[in-house]
Length: 237
Image (cartoon, rainbow, N blue to C red; front, side, top):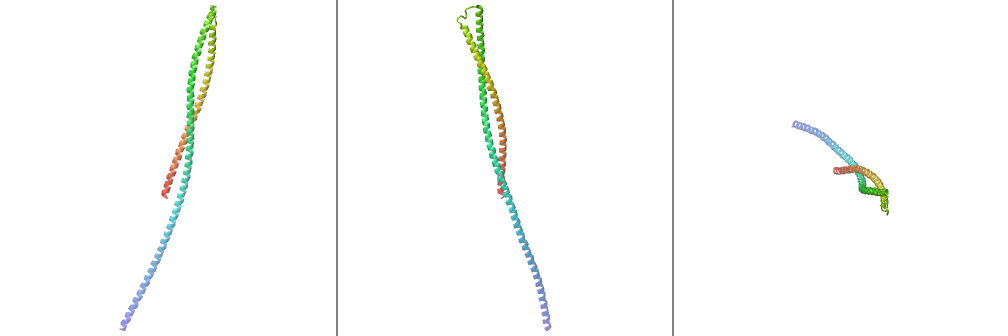
């Protein structure tokens, strides 16, 4: 019995030793697992912090870029608006100048029509001068014939007075015709010069107006593009 008790005790001691050894191994494994878990948690925390930091950096970069884009958009918008206002004022001024030039051109054309009426008056005077010359020639012929015959055909001086009257009228009409033709030539020359000047000014104004309208369209396009960029930036934000 003592021998059996000794073997049983030996077996228990061996079992206890084996269990303690197994316990120590399990404890070591548990400690290792705990360390790995702690390391994983630390890595996860670091990764989260790095991710948050990177996200904050990206967000800050995006906000800075958006602020820069917005500032540039505002500057471009203000410049485009200023260009647009300037082009609009210039276009209005040119249109006003063009309207004034067109009105002056119409007045020049009216003067040209008046010159045409003056030309008709000159033609009428020329006809009267020719008639008076013919009458003067006829009267002179009568006087010459009467003188050659020695008759008293002009005893009362009526034919002579008529001849003198016709001669004076002829001279007056001739002088009037010359003055009228001279004035008409001067007026027509001045009218042509004014018309050419006005036409040149109108052409220059139309050309400048075309350039201004082109710049105006470009400014409107830039302004629309700036507004579109602003809308896109606001949507992205």
